Image (cartoon, rainbow, N blue to C red; front, side, top):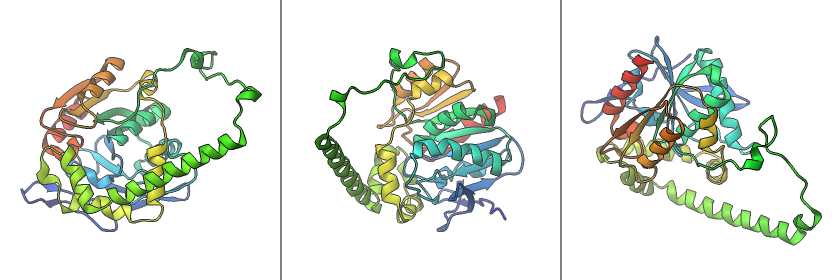
Amino acid sequence: MVQEAGSERDANGVPRLPLRRDGWNFWNFEGNKVHYIQSGTSGTPVLFLHGFGASAYHWRYNIPVLAENHRVFAMDLLGMGWSDKPTGEDIYQVWPRQIAAFIKEVVGGEPVVLVGNSLGGYNCLKAGVTSPDLVRGVVLLNSAGRFEEVKAEERAGSNGRASVSKVPAEEQPTLVASLMDQLKSMALRGSIYASFFMAKQPKRIRQASFQVYISQHNVDEDLVNSIVWPAESANAAESFYRIISGKGTPVNVLLSKLDKPMLLLWGADDPWIGPGSAARIESLYPRAQKVLLSGVGHCPQDDAPERVNAELLRWLDAL
C-alpha cells in the first residue's frame, strides 16, 4: 500500500512535506531497498532526484504544489537517503539502471520529466541518454558533473568506442608500484571516511547549508535531521567514499548524446556551481531554456521554492 506524501504548513504558513523518521515508501531493486515519495493522481509524471548527501525529502516544498496537477515521485538514489547503501558495483553504473527500473515498475512505464538538483541533475542527464524512451524532458537545478574533452583517439572507430591497446611490458606496474597505489587508495579512503564523520555532525550540516542557502530560514531542524538520520545507517561512510571517489561520464559527452527538451533552472548566487556552469551547458545544448534565479543558492528547490514551483509549472504546461 503506497503512503501518500501528505502536507503540513511551515512557520510561515507555506505548504510542505512533513518529515517522517522512517521514510515513506520502499521498493525493491536488484535486492536493494529503495526509498521513494509519491503524490498526485493525474497529469504528467515528474520524478525528482536529489543531490549529494540529501534525500527525496529535499523536495519537501515542491511535491505538494506540483502534485495538484501532476503525478509526482521523488526517489532516494542508492547510497543516499533512506535507500540501501550497497558497496559492490560502481554506483555511477547502478544509478541509471535504478532510475529506469523505477520508471518502469513504480511509475508504470509512462515517460517522465526528470528534475534533478546537483548530483541529481547529473543523473537526469545520464538517464536521458541511457533510457531515452522513458524520459520526456529534463530539468537541471544547479547540476553537478565534470566537463572533459573527448580525445581524438577515443573517437576512433565506427562504433565510437575507445580503442584499447596493450600496455608495453616496460610500462606495466611493478609489485612495488602496485603496493604504493594500494597505500594511496587506503590513505584516500581514510581521509574521506574522516571527512564523512565530521560532515555528518548536525553543526557541520548547518554550517554547510548556511553557505549555500541564501534564504536561511529554511535551514531548519527538519532539513538537518533529513540528512543526519540516513547518515547513521550501515555502509553510509563507504557510500560517501564511493560517490566522492567515483567518476561518471563527462557532462559534455552526455549532452552530445541527449535529445530531450531541457530547462536550466539555476540559482545565480550558488558558491559551488555558479551560473557559468549553466552557460556552458547552454552553449553545448542550445535548445535548452535557461532561467537564472537571482538571490538563490545551490539548492533552489528549497531555497526559493515558490519561484522554482512557478517556473516548473510554466515549463511543464508548455511541454
